[in-house]
Image (tube, rainbow, N blue to C red; front, top):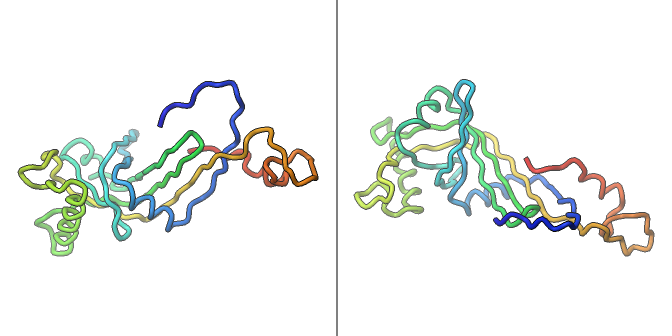
Length: 190
């Protein structure tokens, strides 16, 4: 997304709404890059990752090393994916849950999850886990359970200064009663 131009015109207040879980899942299903946030002691970090959403789980892969060390001490993470079309035209989904590193030689249930993760990653990068893998250092497969899922959507509001054509006047924006127009005050992107 490009930065908006700095024209002197007043921007319309956006309309923010909470997304239903099905809408959140659809956004997760149609995207492949998001951000994984984790914390350790007094430090929070966030990194971009490739992912696949499947059956209430986010599957991904990473390299052994610095991000896995803190997660070994605190497996609770947050994950975010956005679809941005404009400054006031976007959708955002946040997932919170536990991150679980998968092992090919773990218990049978974990082996099944590891194979599922590899199959899903190969849907994104067909060479994943092979000699032709474009990122061969990403050998660690993991999944995050979607314990909590929230989403929000912003859409451009009515143009500033537009009056209702409903004949009542009274300063309502784009045909909304004044109470409804004021209801969006205080909403902001977080």
